[in-house]
Image (cartoon, rainbow over all chains, first blue to last red; front, side, top):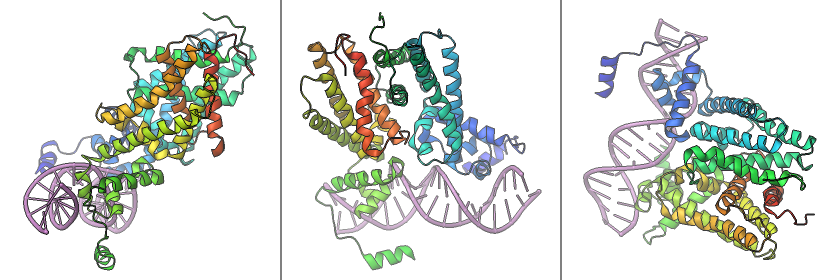
Length: 217
Length: 217
DNA sequence: ACCTGAACACCGTTCAAGT
DNA sequence: ACCTGAACACCGTTCAAGT
């Protein structure tokens, strides 16, 4: 009854997607579903339904569900790089501690603005088995921003000559940890305060990086 | 054909579970499934199948799938508290920096030993809507261990008088971040080195906590 | 009390076929 | 090339009924 009503009253949607933009349409709709109800709630069938296409059509553009989510993750890392670069442009090139704080702020605010996408990006499903090299390189690009800032701080002598790989991982873990606490609703801070919190949290680690003779407020 | 063969060849499993240990059996089997294939792979039907019971029987003991996983998470946090306390007992009560390092080591090694369970514990599904107060209190107990150690360090003057809530969250975020990196296989450290890495990672933040006149190696 | 058969409304994915 | 109908082997959850 319901299906009969649907097909008679609404007919087929007008859009055809013979042009290759079905791929784009599916990715857009996936992003929307992710932010509405989280990664679990994304299904191939519902995505196809929203686009107005048979669910089988999606497999013409994505090998399977994971492959589609991998592209979502990749796009997410690219956007993350953009917002971080934009935030860093606002800070003095010489204040290396402040720059790492800004970086953490941009990272956490991104995760807070797109929690569904962020969960896909950091979930084990997309990352576990070196499949999806696109995700790997996009993530590496984001990761590299932290290394660049840390290297710069060490080169100018603002930071102690620490093990760079280890500290980059530590900073990355800290930012992701804060973002996760937020996703788990474990942070009793009002929403607008997340960026501030991230900046202060990373500040505790940055303080450990500074040379002992550095002046602190 | 298959179902006919199964029922004729194997008959019903002998166990009855009229004693109330079906609940226990389901939790055990859930733990095993989680470690085998991750949280996604856990299903009520497969769990019931392994226990040798109709899948409907599980709903006699757990309201739904999430409720069962919540108990798994709660048990996980209790075990986490135990392993942390055990590790802390090995450290001098007066070396507060080292104690936080030990705590991070125990935390990360737990996550690495039971990755499936850890993902359930920290996933948003179990935590999102204040349902399952048992999870909340078990997590609070674990969280409190960090606060206790930090308070002690500040009281003796080893640490600066920082904002305790903020720093506890920072340390917690750092530990979880490292554990997540491991789960995502983003840490190019051999498996036995995870605990060492966690200890050093948290050490960078601890260094920021120490009074400026503290001797460092 | 505890357990189950049958059913409902979903999934992801594949085959063979349509334009 | 691009799309779909029908089907397979799964899910979580519920009803009404069995012991």
